[in-house]
Length: 191
Image (cartoon, rainbow, N blue to C red; front, top):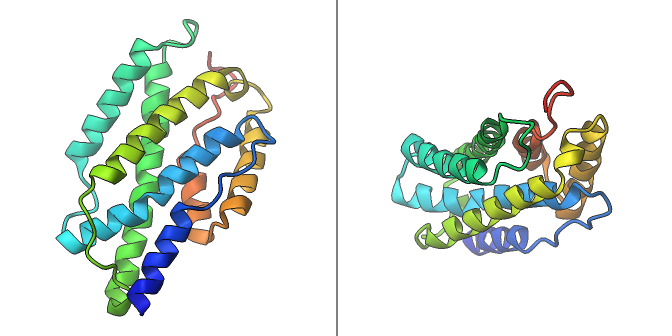
């Protein structure tokens, strides 16, 4: 019964409605939030296969791919550090995701009855992550001017609050979303 409840909870989290896009940064922040929610099925797979949470080789490969994509689509010739910016924000996203996975492992270790049932391989989760990475990159491009503006911090804070409310994030997910989006705004001296 507990496993059915946990499976239902995971499904509900993944099917949470996206936040309304009243703020132009809401779609970007919501994509980051949706990507964080994939941490639970990934953690469940890692738990059941006794796989380490951190996979430095996979992270390095993912960040290298994102860097190459950023280099190929340099959106601002006046900001040559764009590929580094992309690596930073996705590095933050990975750290936030790993934090959720560690939290889930701790929960399941302390309460074995709450441990997830056997799960499928990671191919579906990885496909979702890849699609969300593309969406995040697209939203960064669409919102580039705002991400470089003095009003960015306020816009990110408002969008984050809207997404947290819409997705009904608990404290763990709120902190993870803060971490995942902390580098979105460029310093005013940049670009």
